[in-house]
Amino acid sequence: MLDVFKTSKNRNEKKEIVLDKDNIPKHVAIIMDGNGRWAKKRKLPRTVGHKAGVETIRRVIKEAHILGIKFLTLYAFSTENWKRPDDEVSALMKLLVEYLRSELAELNRNGVVIKILGDITKLPIDAQKEVLNAIEITKNNTGVVLNIAFNYGGRDEIIRAVKLISKEVEDGNISVSDINEGLLEKYLYTSNIPDPDLIIRPSGEQRISNFLLWQCAYSEFWYSNVCWPDFKEEHLRKAIYDYQHRDRRYGGV
Ligand code: IPE
Ligand code: IPE
Ligand code: MG
Image (cartoon, rainbow, N blue to C red; front, side):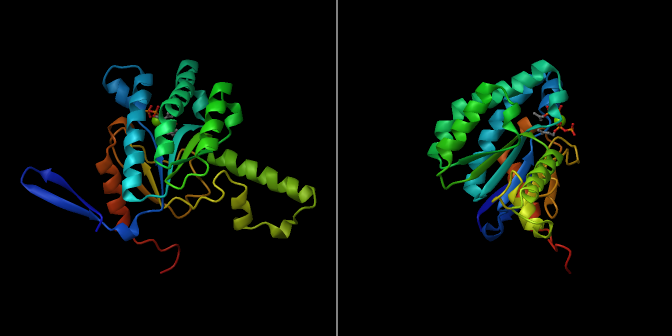
């Protein structure tokens, strides 16, 4: 038994939640949603919500390490998020740079491996540099693998893979009959990363929003009404607790 935390449904009743350390999901992916609504409720600009969300990232990475989660994927900016007002888009780009500048040393000390899922060539040059530097510095670490999904879209990822594979066929390196699931996976941003066992979405929305479309085939989903800046360690633990009580059948009996 790994850990215990108590939730009280009312003042008199305390319920203990115990996690099974032998059934911790290997890969947890989170759609970090609700920053804007969190800020709106407080009559603050949306960008303040995004900043508050960074605090949650710090907490969740630490907790993932404590719980023994090996892969943590955080959806930070989608291929559709470019539709947002210019000032919000640039604030999110700036936040990525600030986050990596301020956290990289500590993440590296804790053995975190930073990876990026998405097309970073469309990011401002300073963000690209910061991202490449973080990947390079942490590449030989052996701790939690932190995948930051930035300018990521599941459809975009699949189209990119199809183009790369088509090129291999065109060049005569492979034939059409070589194409199978295993081969396609090698051309995804997530090659060498196992599929997510658990996908978490806070903020009350219950949709996938173009996240890990190929990889979520047999993921378990967990939703919460709290907005991302209010997401705490206990929410992650509750998600894992619920995950541990599901029956994953993968189409079998
Ligand atoms: C953060 O939450 C997700 C990002 C795209 C950065 P939102 O900005 O989508 O917040 P809501 O959904 O408008 O509340
Ligand atoms: C999904 O959230 C993308 C990220 C969290 C980065 P959105 O807020 O963009 O999704 P929709 O628009 O509600 O589907
Ligand atoms: Mg949103």
